Image 1 (tube, helix red, strand yellow):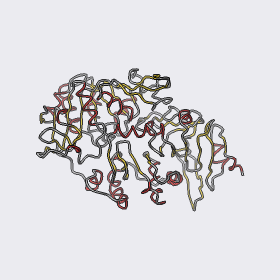
Image 2: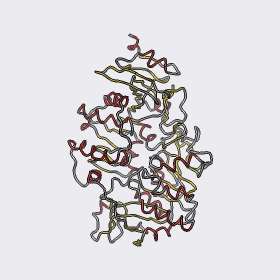
Image 3: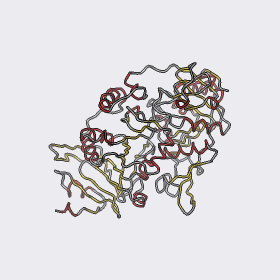
Image 4: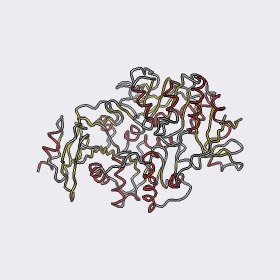
Length: 509
């Protein structure tokens, strides 16, 4: 039977050595008060300590002075297993300083491993991750030098087929954020942007004899409609009521509480961008890339668009009139509508539906997407892409590996080089004014996020769209298929590559 508690009282349910799973997505839907109560207790008593933290999509809020970053920084955590660390500023630094064990697994594979525990199964099989960094036969999921847990990912064979087997430590504490609890303890998510892994996390926790702690905005006397209840009260141990922080009306567009027609998507997006954007710069190369990449969209496509340069695809898809003829999706579970960006990435304006995350990744893993647009840090001569780890820094693989693993057409949106790149566009003519000092097309990527070998075996169409040219994945590596007007193929492309590429014969004339 659940009990209503203060956040400080709820922390007494957490013990040294517990394995805590957090339901969140990057910077959204974090149970912030629960994290900060845990920090208060640890700061005062030195307990709970030796914690293991698990999250499919990360649990920061873009602020290293708040949320879980406080107790992580103080030393309460021994191990973190996470799909993405992007919103966890100080944690990313501490990982590279070997302050605790840290592992990066594909977001969807963590989600499915949590769901497996919920069903009493130790782990989950997946084709996702084969031949990329997480595969133990390549590198494995460890991020730093002190991380040596080889139980998380294993390369196995079943019925003559290769798989990776993802297995998480047994979860025995769940930290969840919901909208409301009724008098039966049922938790609804009516004002939430997503439900994530909430139900699976709670089911796994109870299967392991653990404790479920839920932060809610309010407690109501009228029960929620059964289909609106995400977590049944029988799975809940502690309910913590916390008055929500005030937020601008623009955020209400993300809750699904009212219909937002296509004609209003841009208006709501503009209102949100002013409050949530992490960058606000004019990016000419990015616009060139987005305009060319958007040409790959076809009516009725089911689509995923990544963050950064790929987000410019939506601008040109709208201008061409095809945006309302495709279905956009986002890893957090949204189908339809217009995915938000910046600090509220994972939320959706005018979504048609919001699935549990494990169900969304079923769609991605089985090749249900027609096309996706992804960014990248490095591309090598074989066509492999590194999108998760740069020199001296990392964010994590997130849903990238799941999304690109079987999608029919994968479009990588990357500049040819960076750090000083300057480009002009005038009436469709491209001028490379200055090349960046850091090449993006290199002989061998530092770490593999996307396997060209696996893509060829899956017969996927793979394009690499830059601000000056387009490559496709051929049988022997990259193949140059387009050079934009104004670009000199020899001086602006071929002479800058550290390897030879096949050239489409039409470009020779």
